[in-house]
Length: 154
Length: 235
Image (cartoon, rainbow over all chains, first blue to last red; front, top):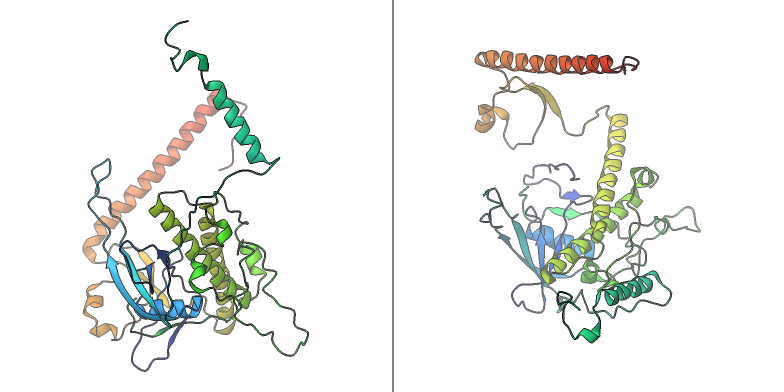
């Protein structure tokens, strides 16, 4: 359900500063594909945002001290084809490389660490796990057969 | 939307409500209206949360979980009870939450793992949409009271070359319309040679309507034949 397209007023020299309430732009922090310097953070931004927009966004909403912002537009491929041989377009997106000021560094954290998944006593997950283990045990053949399948009679 | 450099500022009240994000933004907004002892002065809002770039990620306890619990999305009815300041703050809370979820989704795609509870994105988007509608309602009401105009953006009913009348919304230009070559090429009237096409279109539409009506009549008469006691629905 998208928000309808907003038309911003035309800017001419001498106009007052445009203030935006409730910006409808979302930044995605991504892990850099290539090795980046320690103070550089990589974002995927909407195509309409400029370097100044990104700087103001991060400074005002996230209180992040931003030094420099560099942007580029990544072309989404139009080469793949679907089962009807029609070309499928991958959407284009803008990538922003933000360098933090005041000597701050940022490293992309590991958001999917290996967690020890032992369910607590008396819980639903524990009962489910026990049930699944029992089922798997029933499906296994007699160990005395020595790995021979049921196809061989007797 | 290519405006000049440096002419967009974001107006946010400097209140970030939580030190740590214990409750998700989809819970009830009980913390957002502080009770002040002195009734004359406004409550002071100070920036409490200074996590910076950590706000693009979930709380560290939720990393690696399969399901992250979250509440129901905001409904328009609930949002209409909130004040303008509350809605303004809530917009930014939802914005940050959506940024966090988008970052998580992208990272899960990169690591080729499933994103925990992807329904949160939908909930947040719907909440933001409803917030926008509530704010628009309030703006239209205020505009009606102050100026008598219902719409913020001026427009007019115009007829395009195909014979259709539509609501043309005005756009802001730096030059007047008689100097705008591209605008002058656009014709807001129906030329004479289009009239036969309009007539054919009208005939097609009427034929279609007549066909639907006869189909309905035929099916109803067949049903009446089979089931004579059937009550005919009023339509």
